[in-house]
Length: 194
Image 1 (cartoon, one colour):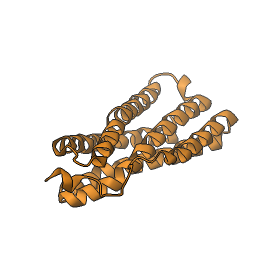
Image 2 (tube, rainbow, N blue to C red):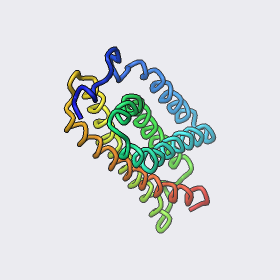
Image 3 (cartoon, helix red, strand yellow):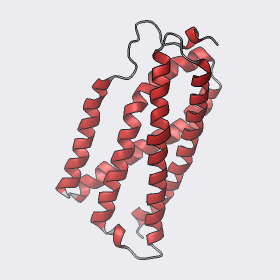
Image 4 (cartoon, one colour):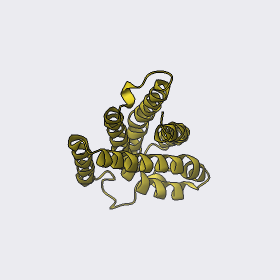
């Protein structure tokens, strides 16, 4: 596959649109409002809605989109990636930060941070899984998304680099999906009571 066949179509312009930051800021304002208000329902709603979206997208990407993309021809994969990656740059970090932050404040407000062992192991497990998900998402997936978008904007993108980046991305998303399954089990335990 040639670099020309992978490059963004003429007139595409920047793939990463900074105007998306307005809704990111709005989402963080809603989260901040829920935290500051100390309204248990609002904080729980923000945590659950962001968590459901983050988990659902991760599972869909890891177990549906990833395997499908591996089998697509390069022009179709390129077209899909040109539309997917710019959105993921803004969406997934926002959801992960809001889920973890609101979850911390929710656990604190409910009293889960003060439970004793053996129930505390559930809290530790939740913190470890959310930590792994967040570090992997912000440390691997986000930079990979940005690098892929920047490569695709070039007139002659580095085809080998794009291949390596996408393989890493797809593997990481599969790991994210597995970790999301673990957090579902842990959160089900929280909801049923420690």
